[in-house]
Image (tube, rainbow, N blue to C red; front, side):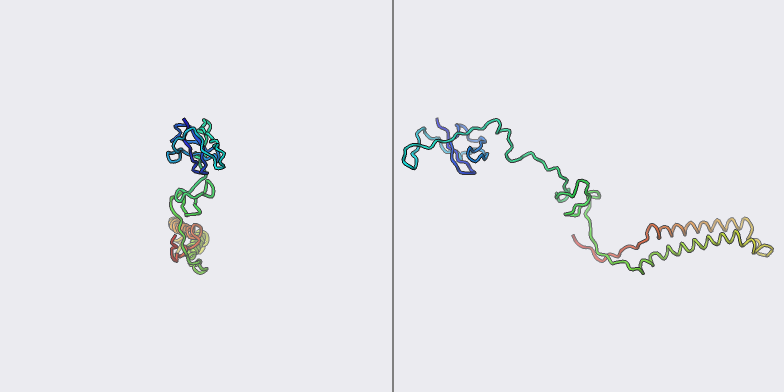
Length: 214
């Protein structure tokens, strides 16, 4: 018995297939488009008698038969199974600049802190504001220098000045020891404060004008 006449959904050409082909995947012999044969695409079986040709010759145009080979079963016409392994942003799924990129250029997502970047407007710091910010550090530095000069004077100049006078007790070893000890404590505090302001935090914080909404 003759097989059904199948219509290709891509090129709309008709060809003859094998019996029981409905529900199977085949490839069009004319345009090579793969498709699954449905009941709508497969017409009813025709008899062995040929239809008359339009030119009146009384002969039918031979139908082409198709079959699905093992090689076609292993093919992948739609490219399924191909994975894009390029790094993407976990937030917006857009491509990152490179695999070690931290910030996404599309949404501003930070891959390390798991947060979004923010943009703010700030006022520019004037030279006067910068000087006022450094003023405490300069003051502590000046006090550190004055205390150092005072310790040197107490150790070198004062003994000569008070020798043989009523103020000679100032040159006593215990007095000089405790005075220098307390002065060194103040000097440590002054040096610490000056270092924090002049070295660790030499620039004042910028004044935020307003947040820019993303």
